[in-house]
Length: 169
Image (cartoon, rainbow, N blue to C red):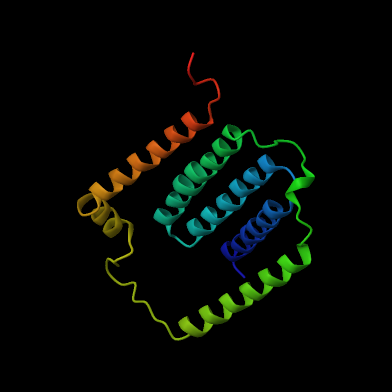
């Protein structure tokens, strides 16, 4: 095994451990922070696979936007921040069986579907950073900007709806 493979396996273990802690912790804010660790380890795995564009998208969109949105949602809804026993429904065994069955089905389908797949990476592939950037900023720039405005409007709407000091005087 090379050093890159060892680091990749260690990052996979960190991502898996953090993901388990996301769903098993009883503190909502800690779950969001473990999600950051899991997403960060996944981004580092993408870097090791020389998929820099995908790694930075992972960091910017998931770590930078989704987790921040979750934390804003926790703060704005005044969810309990400390340890809470209400977060456990008591269905751990059923959840574990469903998760294991779903994972086994997904792995089986992916292995069977892509066993003989071949991707030619010669030249400038369609999934390269150059091709994605050119497509994003030439063809899809208007939908991209409209989506950002929609997300901004949703965030402002959530703030307005959560405020209790607004009302008739």
